[in-house]
Image (cartoon, rainbow, N blue to C red; front, side):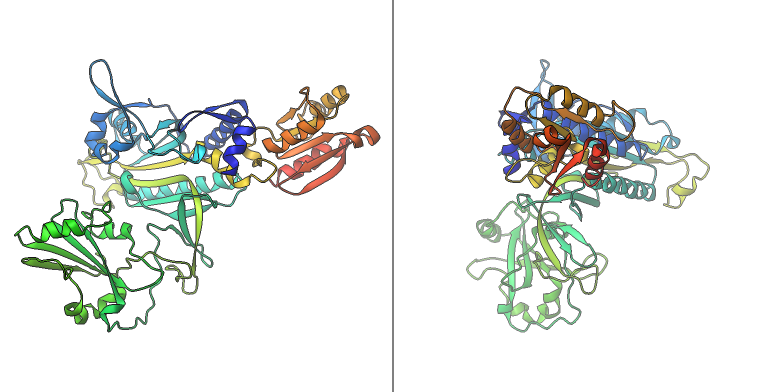
Length: 542
């Protein structure tokens, strides 16, 4: 964690408690700039800003069925009337309830509302500084549309705005297909900054650009599958349902590099309990219960063609376990008839989207996520509109009946402001200090003069700040503190200003400044009358 340590040393933040941080003036400037950049791109899609309360009620979360699923991560409290409340880690329930109470007509749609606010999650083990904390700042955009097609169009528009936002950071980023998890919905993408300290693994194609989180990533299955003739060439993974009444076998080709993908198995068998690593004691109890035992067999497509011939020689039930009547069922394709790929992919696997590309993994830090939620929250919280008796073309096209009441289609789109702060610090830091993108740097330019140049340094400051004449102006700081020149230079490196203008020996000799930019490996003497344009050219690349 190179960047986190330098944020502390450079005076951007201090840790107050485990996973809780205080922002100092430099840190607040970075946070404010990220927020302003977010505001710019939210305005570009016509979103309106609001502010929701951090405090939410457990009652709302019970209505959507999310309370029990995330209870362990919630900060929970009660008021003096013993009403159970929570500090919100996210605001789907609150915004949906708000819109449900104010939505009067289908003509009010679409609606796009966003906020930038503090959120809370009781992390079991806070770590990585701002990247995994208990209190964090996030931008949430919530969208409400009449139809699914309109919601998907909104999703695409917001995706374009997100790409524009991350492009302004001038740092490589990856947009990856992702799981919706507890949020719900069936369409989501993550926005990642590649980093060796990243907690996520992304697989990306070197040819077509396909990218997906390893939980949902798939690979190309060869069209000429060889028949498996030996049971020893088939692996089995065993699991159990959450109610401990159904056993699950997952059959896939034996391999030294591939293991079963639990996330995909969970999508195929929703009742699967993925929290149990060793289910054999539960299997034994279930098999000896005296009732007919259900066993679901999930079969990878590379095994499916040979499975029937091999079944009698495969350990459908562990041979050491006694059992009564067993009823087997089999799943070997999706609901659309496609074969199942239930193994985790590895470097070198074929891309599922193109014919010749191969996949390679990257460690990455997630800094944004978009979800198409559908009616996951609008149904339980009654965010709905009544259609008129006359036909509304877009509604009729999706089979909505005139005069009927219909839940709205929702989307949720988040950006981790705190995570971007911490991630950029981590990714761009070097041995000398932090390095900031121009868009979010605490200051774009720092002026560091030697002793005795107080008057001249103010003139240079006025030029770069746009107070004298025409030309570009910048967000400038003048280091006039009572420290040695060497100390101030080291501090400028540690803070990570994009451009440093030095008024030293060359200034005294010829009235020229030394301009440094570490990220671009630039160190050049520049005359004062050319300073604005030269600095502007550097910043345009950052």
